[in-house]
Each structure stands twice: as C-alpha cells, then as structure tokens.
Length: 570
Image 1 (cartoon, one colour):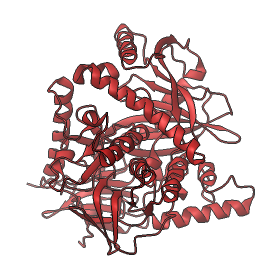
Image 2 (cartoon, rainbow, N blue to C red):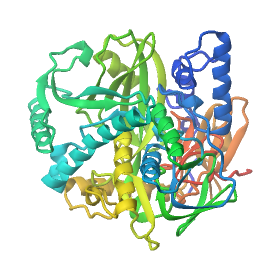
Image 3 (tube, rainbow, N blue to C red):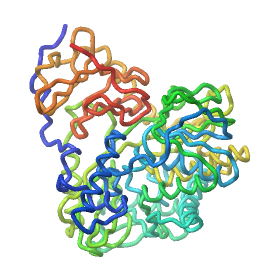
Image 4 (cartoon, helix red, strand yellow):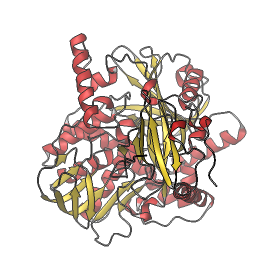
C-alpha cells in the first residue's frame, strides 16, 4: 500500500545551507581564487568583467564547476576534443591528479600517451580537494600495522614520503608554479583524555617504525595559531599544493614530452584495448588506465570493495600571517582537516570534514557548513567571514588501502585502475602515478602488492565492518528503486527544492525551479540502476551505490555514470 503525500518531506531541510548560494562573494564578480587562476588578480572593473566572462564560458561548457579556494569556477577546457581515431601505447581516462600523474611518467619515459577527459582537467574531485600532501595516513599507521603487518605499513609510509618528494621534484624540473609549500603537519588530540592520549602514543610509535623519525609527541600549549590544541604528533616535511595550478603545469609538461590531452571527450565504452568516445572516435592502446575517481566501468570486483563519501569544506578569511602555515588533522570521527591558503592581502583558513555517505536520505542532512564554521571559529579565534563553501567526494576502501594497479577480472590483461584514495587524493593520486606507470613500463613496482586491487584483506573487525557498510549502502540503493515512497505527488515539491517521488511504478527525480516549473527525470542511476537521492546541500541527485552525482536538471556532473538522468514526462 502506498503512503500518502507528505508536504513536510518536500520542504528544504531545516539548517541546510546550499553550496550554490553559500558564497558571500558578490554576484558581479568571481572570487579572488578564480581570478588568480585565470591570470589575476584583477586591477580594475574591466579585469573583473574579463574574469567573470571566463567563468561564464567555463560553466557553460563544463557542468559541476564549483567556487573553491582554488578557482575551479574558471577551469574550462584548454585542450581540443578528440577528432580522429588514434593508436597509442597507453590511453588514460581521466585528467585529475591520478590520470595526469600516470600520463606524465609514461610520456616522460617515451611512451605515446593519450589522456581522455570528459569535461576539463581538474573539473572533478581534484578541483574540490583541500590539497594536503600528507605524511600521516588518515587510517592511522598503528591500525594499518594491526591489519597488514609492519612491512606493509613501512611501504605505505615510504609511499607517502616519496609522493611529496615527487611533486616537489616535478615542479622544479618542469619549471612551473604548483603552489607547492613544505609545511609541518600536526595530528592533534581532540581531547586530553587518557584514551586519546594513549592512541596518540601508539600512533607516534608506529610512525617511527614506518620510517618517520621526526614524528614526535609535542605540546602545542593551547596556542591559537594552532587552533588552541595541546597534545599533538608533529610531522615535519609535510606539504601543500595549489591543486589546479599543479595539474595545469603537469598537463603542459605531458604535452611537452609528446603526450596528447583531449578534453570534452567522454568515454562511452571500453572493449578490450579499444576505448570508444562520444565524439564518434576511438583510441586503441596496448594499455588502458581508468583514473576517474569512482571507475566508469562495471567491474564489481572494484565497486564492491569501496563506497562513496561526501565531505564539506569552508574557507574563512584571515588577516595576513595571523595563523601559521601548517596542516592540522584532529582525532575526531569523522575528522577535521585544516590548512591555510595565502593571497596577496589576506589568508584563508581552509577547513574540511563532516563526512557522510553519498546519497543518504534527505532527512539525514544537517547544516554541515555551520558545524565547520563553528569548529573553525572556536579553535582559530582569528577566523573572520566565510568566503567559500563547497563539497567534494572521496572513495573509501573497505580495507584501509587505496586501489592502484591491474584491474581484477580483466580478461584482456591490459587494464589498470586508480581509485579508493580514502580522502588523501593528492598524495594518493601521485602514488598511483608512480605505481601504475612502473607496472606498465617495467611490469612491477615496490608498492604494487600493497596497493593491488586484487589483494585479499585479512578478516578482522575493521575490514568486516567496512565491508558490511558498503554492502548495506549498495543494497539500500538497489532496494530504494523498488520500494514505495512517502511522497507521490509532484505538487508536493516546493519551488527551489527537489525530491524523489513515486508515480505509479516509477521512481521520479523532481526539481521545481523558482518559477514553479517542475523538471522530472527517472531517479534511477544509469550506471548500475541504484536509486538516487535528493541532496539538499548541493541541490543534486546523488547515487548511494557508487557516487554518481546529477545536477538539479539531470546532467551528470560526477561519474561513474556516463549519462544524465533520463527525462520523464508525467
């Protein structure tokens, strides 16, 4: 029996702040960050108009660009779309940090490489990151050691150290500005209770066994430049980058070394060593690398061992040099991650956290931005007005380690995958670049076994709990596609809001614009047929199973789905 209509369920959630209206930036100009990325800062009104026009052009071509502290709003396509069939040594799908790092290493080694990007480079999660280059692994070294043993833990630590060194060396060698800064990282105790302090001691001991000789317990003495924290582990030689500046430089270096990049070139099918695109042309290669965040293929050996999480970020204005240039990660679950980004006349405190599973039910949303702002201002009392708010997505592996290597169950023997970075995308994407390029060039890498997508996790409390969570998420997403809805009338959806309703046997995604017009689509994700859920923070329809995201008008702005939601006429 169907439930009756519920108007309350269709109202915008109390306390939710939508990312598209959250920025305090004036509407007649883009942010300082966007102007800087586009060649600014602006010196006059004419410059402001020029940068605004660049942003408008970029957003007309690339759905899903966001106003971040990195300026993603102006990150439009620079390279051409694929206009002919190609035969290359390696085709890389995805122009985020993983795909471009892999392509760079291969092109530099003399391989003929083509990168295919469905939108523009950095238009996905690379442009929505907070760009910590982390020595600390956020699954904790002592927990990695418990699950995988000391030798694998040491290799994970080594991979984090070498990733930071690689980024620094590439910037120096290729001669571009990637916004790279060596900083100190701090794992800070959220409280001074015995359980937390004992955990910090365990982590410091494990970190030293993992090769971080400089990792030590210190007292920050409640210094407000350090968020008022006390007990912490100090991680010398951590780093930060400006992610879009970095990958733009990396892309130029790929082309310099003979590689090719094709933007606005969405892949439609992967068949053995042939990759077909929606431009009508295809690329044939000896090796195919899928580096699209959540993989665009249907390999359940990958999709079944990770799940998508959404994470929130705010950027608060600071007086210049009022906070130390450093990185802070607290011990809460989910944890907060904080850093500082500098501009000519001010700094920005960049604070992330409040993670939750992608595609959760609309009733479970809360004002994550307000929570982050409260946390930031309570800890860093210097923090001023909020300049930026945005969300991103991460893929959380069920066994603590990312998935970089040969694709499981691939009968062709030429497919490679990079995913499951667990929220450490800039570090992890760089590690993926080292591992996968070496596998293609040499057949092996010293970390290949650790990051292998085919590894078998030992059954323990951590891996079993994570796996159960992933199974529950996917099962719920599939079940929602057939279960009746509480809301079954388009008229119950208010202007400026969205919902998933049931009309007869159809699950319908509805967005009603401010003029009162209802836009209706199938709520079923075209990737693997899970049902999407309305996300009132981003004003999107999100798939809980594998992380696809669709804007309010049904356009796919985040894969693995290759198509938008199917329009429906009711």
